[in-house]
Each structure stands twice: as C-alpha cells, then as structure tokens.
Image (tube, rainbow, N blue to C red):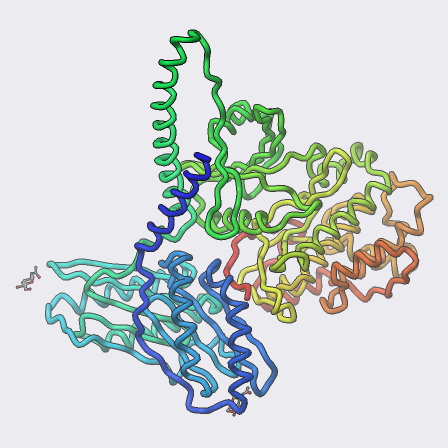
Length: 634
Ligand SMILES: *[C@@H]1O[C@H](CO)[C@@H](O)[C@H](O)[C@H]1NC(C)=O
Ligand SMILES: *[C@@H]1O[C@H](CO)[C@@H](O)[C@H](O)[C@H]1NC(C)=O
C-alpha cells in the first residue's frame, strides 16, 4: 500500500518535472513541394502507417525514418529532434510536427521545422540530401547593433561547426563579451556522416551569418538545422540523458523513501511507546526495501540498494568476479534470501555507455523468454551503475567449449540442445514480441548456461529495436558494432543491418559448438582462414567430419554433419540465401527434412578487399570491439 503510493507520487513528480522543460514547439517554417501525387488517399494511408512505425523510435531515439507504399505513391519520411530535448519533450514535438506536415498533401512532399524538431516527407529517398534549393533561412526583425556582436557570432558559429560533426551531429555553444551574449545550436540529421554534416553546417553558417544584425537567425537546410540568438533557448543537454533521469529519479526515490520512513518511524515510535509499556525489549527486524519501478513506459525493474549489492558480493571481492569485458565487470552475488545473482558493474564516466545501459534495460525488460537471460533490476548511484541478472551456474559457453578439459562435459546431446535453445531465443527476438530485436553480438561468450546447460542469450548492450512493419528494409549503420569473426560480411562492409546479421553469427556459433574451436583461432598457414571457410572447404570435398570435435562420439555423426551443413547455410555470403531463424528451427526440429546445399561463405581475403574500399580496418585475427552505436534503426 505504502509502496504503491510512493510509486504514484514518484510518477507524478516525474511527469511534473518533465513537463516543465521546453519542447520548443514554435513553428519556424513549413514548405511544400510544387508537384502533386495522383492518389492522395493512398498517400495519407502510407503516412499513417509510417507514423505508427516512427512513433516509438522517435520517443526512444529522437530520430527515425521510414517508408511505406509502392511507387508512384510510395512515401518516405524522416524526422529528428534536437539532441538537447529529452525523450519526452521530443515525443511532444513530434506529435505536433507530424500533424502539420500532412497539410502539404496532395503535394508530393514537404518539410516542417519547429524549434525543437524537424520532419520531411517526399516520394523519393531524400534521406542523404545535405543542401538543396529548398533550403531557407529565417532572420528576426529585432536587431543588435552592438559592435562586438558580429565577431562574437562568428566565434560561436565557428565553434559549433567544429564541434557538431564530432559530437554525433549536435553542437551547442555560447559566448559573452562586453555584456552581449550569443547562443548557438546546430543539429545534423543522424543519417548523415561527419563530412556531410560538416558540409551542411558550413553552408548553414554562411546563410545564418547573413541574418546579421538580426538578434536571432536560423538556417534550415535539408540535412541540418542551425540557430543563433542573443538569448538562451537551449535545454540542458544532460537533462535528456539517462544519468540525469537516474539522478533525479534517485533524488525523488530518496525523498519519497525519506518521507515514508519518517512517517513510519513517527508511527512506530508512537506505537512503540505504547507497545513498550506492554512488552519491553522486543526488537523490530530490519528489512531490505526493494522498489518496483516503472520508469517511462513499459520499463519495469527492481531498484537494488548499493548496500545490498555490496553485501551480496562481499564488497565486490575479486573472488566473486565472474569476468570482465568492454562494458565493465561481472560479479556473482548472493542475496540475503539465498538467491544467486550476477551483477554487472559498469565502467564509470563513459557517456556513450549510458545509451547502451538504457538500451540494454529497454530491450531486456521487453523481451522475456526461457532462452534469454532474465534481467532483475539495477542500481544507479552517482558514482557507478550496476545491472542485476539471474545467475547461471555454468557461466558462459566459451568458458567450457574452448577449454580442452571442460569441453568434455558437453556431449552431443547437450551441444544440440544449446544450438536449439539459442535458435529459439533468437527466433523470439526476431519475431516473437511487438518489436523485432536484432541482437548484433551473438557469440559463445554471450551464451550463458544454467545448471542443466540450458542456453540463455545475454548482453543486449548492442541490440537494436526495429519496428515490425519495416522488416523488408535493411538498416544502414554508419558505425558497425559487434565482435570480429562473428560479423556478417555485408554488415562489416556496408553497415547493412538485418536479422540475417544475427543468423550469420548464429551459423558461426553452430560451427564452433560442433568443432570446439574458435572461428578465428583455427590453426593454418593461411592467416585468413577461419573455421567457416575451413568447414566450407571440407564440405565441398565431402569431408565435414574432419572439423568435428574429437571429444564427441561417432554415433551421432549423421546428425552432426547435418548441423554443420546448417551452420554453413547460415554463414553464406549472400544474406538473402541464409535461412531465417524460424526456418533454422524447422530444420533443427524436423530431422528428416532435407537441407539445401549451402553456397560459398565469405572469405576473409575477399572481405579485406571489400572493406578497404569502405575504409574499415580488418584487424587480422584480433577481436574487433567497436561498441559505439549510432541511432540509425528505422
Ligand atoms: C514523385 O512525384 C512526381 C509528381 O507526381 C513524379 O513526377 C515523380 O516521378 C515521382 N517520383 C518518384 C520517385 O516516384
Ligand atoms: C562595450 O560596449 C560599449 C557600447 O555598448 C562600448 O562603448 C565600449 O567601448 C565596449 N567596450 C569594449 C571593451 O569593447
């Protein structure tokens, strides 16, 4: 009762706090194309379908693009908020702007600029346009004749142009001199790369500068937005960040808990005095408080106290450490009630990781399946952040599979069940829930095993949420994340992200499970040989049994060979040829089903050629841990 009341207060406090901030809903400009579409009804329908696609992405990522329909009525839409808006403010801005745009129809398209967000629609893919004839500028009527103003403005805009392209496209700067202040903000649409962003902003600065001596000016380009003003208008960019949300959240929790505790304490004291008179010397038992938290929409998890985690891990004793990675360290802990947990202690002060934490919580709190690691909750202090998961007794698959002694525990029955369970978990991610999820980092160390060797997929820090409608479209990523050796060739070379990227990693994993060898650790004179290419060569010469782990018996040889073929089907160079996870499961469940003949997997030497033309580095046999993510999923 008291707990639900405090959550209630908390949510109210939250919404009040966020509704105070400014989503900057003023309309700056609207322009419509001069050509018209033939079938306006269809165009409206497409627009409605697109909005449904984009709404959630806008709320989550503050950026989305999507398309719907067939030519000649095919519609493309892109929208983005300025990065200093919080997710909630962005949602407000988007809900206004998406209602203004259709006033352009039956024109083939149009653009609307609000001070907080932008939307554009057209009947062709304009996403990568940077500067167009339709670009505009808006200058205020008020002027500032202070002599310092011009040089100050140039300095501020210069700063932004240098800053934004290296800051995810967002730049904020201000300067004051002799009583005059200039504030500037710039935002490139996230689909543009650094150079395109620079080009766009340089052009924007050139047009905004011509607003002089207006006190305020805005440049509205196809690829970016730039604004300057003598008064401050931007929000605190940290206000939208996870850390800020968490910190304010903790302040509220603390305040509410404090008030509740106070009330309880006062009540208790009064009660105790009466009680003591009847029965002296009775002690009240301390109890850990766990708060069920509903953060934003649909995000539910437990809030653990730092002291609870400290106690559970014996003050993060080295002996309790399960492992570490690019994200931080993982400890085993035991709660007072005996439950075992795994605690991920995240490295401090890595701003980019905040997105990943939020991403992981977001994904994992939506996705619940027997083959996905269960997320229990988090602990967020001003110094460190922790995520808490169920503990799995047999740790990660790689710790057993690649250990010459331990791998003997894994007979074929267990390995087959690990393959099937992982496939089930992945299928669920790809199609089981309201949004499809691409994990992007399927590998042996991210498959955890419980006491009975049942596999559970872990580590959703890189996972991407995509709406179900757009499953025909691949997503183009400007930065690629994953682990080298498991990454699909089209993803490395072009950043093209579909479920087939996970299918590829799954195929590599299947071959590793069968051979007990790491894909990139294969012994050969040819440095560029991988387990996948090796398996392929043996498949062609009808000798796949050569790659089978020696610790596996020979009685299941036919089934094992069949699953090698399945692994090769999943690692084919052409994504369209790889089966979906649903098809993979059918093949695994129906053992008499004949498998297609796989085509060639990607060969590393070809990949090196391919990727050098795209400017990527393939670091030989070393793992690539490029974990920066961009918001590019539509
Ligand atoms: C967009 O619409 C215009 C006017 O109807 C038409 O001329 C043009 O071909 C269309 N573009 C595409 C890519 O369909
Ligand atoms: C500051 O501005 C005033 C007028 O606004 C001007 O007279 C004065 O010279 C300026 N001082 C400096 C140091 O530029």
